[in-house]
Length: 125
Image 1 (spheres, rainbow, N blue to C red):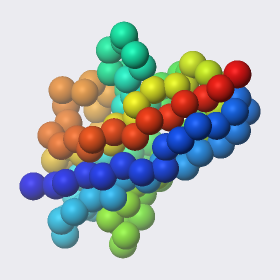
Image 2 (cartoon, rainbow, N blue to C red):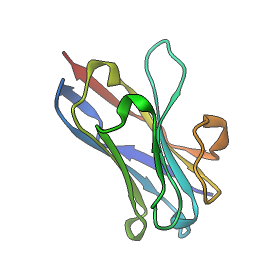
Image 3 (cartoon, rainbow, N blue to C red):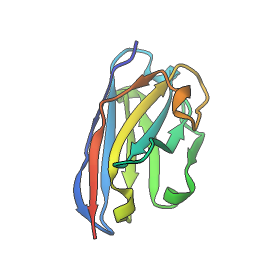
């Protein structure tokens, strides 16, 4: 069982930056592949980024955030991060972190076993 808690969301102007954190409970954090998803009002939840377990040397991003967002993990702190730079109004959404009881990430939400409660990111123009 893993419990996830996101933090770091807020209101930022276009072009600004935020860093989201996802703190996980449990002693086996390093054995879970992790992902970030987001959901804007009236839209379905969509994949943002993912990272494999252990060393986190495999990452994947949706095209719309490539070059702007960076996913990383610190297994010693049981925490995953999403550094978001050059934010755009279309990045506005509730951001969720998710954990998958597997070494390899997935881009579909149904592939994840545990979810956080979400943190709101609002980018003003």
